[in-house]
Figure 1 (cartoon, rainbow, N blue to C red):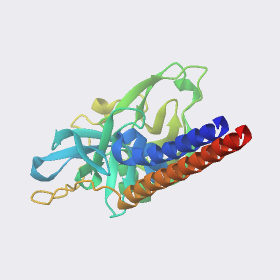
Figure 2: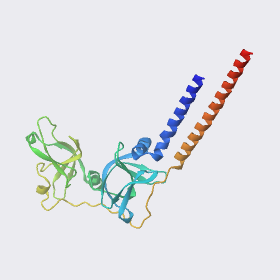
Figure 3: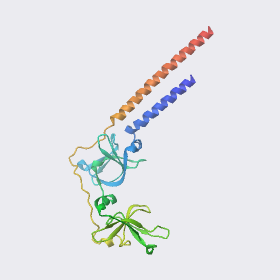
Figure 4: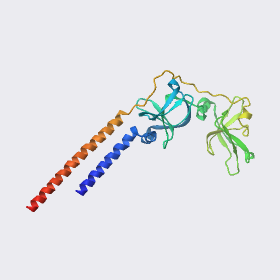
Length: 273
């Protein structure tokens, strides 16, 4: 009997764990949704501005839960780490990270903030394949690393003897005739650029009248019906079927156990007679 009870316990635990793992996709926070669906998620890691109907955007618990975690006013800056496309073709962005706080937002309501990727998309056809590097006379000097040519973001970095000299392999020439070199990854900077002609000058020196303005096209979402998450019917069906199987198997095992108990009692009774 002990072996039978152990068998029932193990089977029930196994079935329950399987059901809970699938049910998590619907009912638990967004990090679990990402973990369950990460093979269908696309890496993004870019910044966006909220631009939703009625002047606001809702952050939802998951693409399958209508629970609102937070509401942003249009113009709020949002970092999206991954996107997920649901069965209806709606693309959702994960704000925050897969290990903690945050939620999912319809990407239709997100406007990209111009960045290095945007620059490459706009000017990539003007890049030329050309390699080179800054000379040793820059060792001990402070140069500026740029997010992209003409960006508002440029950061000073002192080149020490222990560091590799900045080496570029693509070149872009701006409207002023200045030569820019693309470094790729360089000591913590992704998609880094340097101004080859004036590596020690910052934005104020290169652009005394202000850096060039790059604006992304704003999508008109006012008056549109809001996108709200809907539960995935296939996952609900799976959970229901799993629970049904659990109940049926449990009943069958209990019936079998009862029959064994009855047979044992009958044998013991015959032995006494």
